[in-house]
Image (cartoon, rainbow, N blue to C red; front, side, top):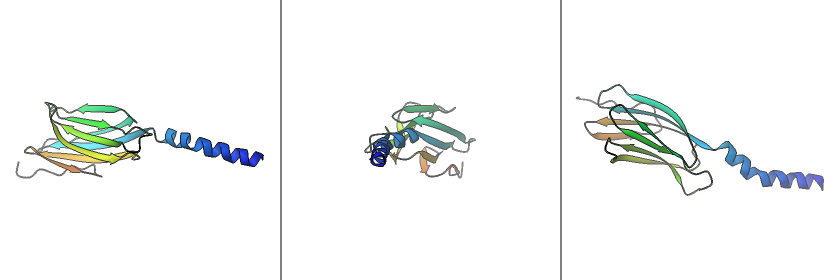
Length: 125
């Protein structure tokens, strides 16, 4: 009887242990505008939260980690210009714990690469 009770307790606690281990998303990214020096960053965002990174040229990277218990939700990466206009939006499944990506902005055209930490070089600038 004690063995059956111990197994029941382990099964009952399993969902709580799993969600505690996966309580954030680690984003690693690089953004390069034309042939300027790339901006690199690494940030951990708690599930259900959003953080913004403002680059020197005013470009904004908005990172959102999916809520832990919402399996339909996604973790999102948004690239915004200095006026707040969305240039690109990428989604990752709710259970992703680490996401690497790179943006290259060449003469106004955006290239997104994932997984990656190396932006595509601009040519002819």
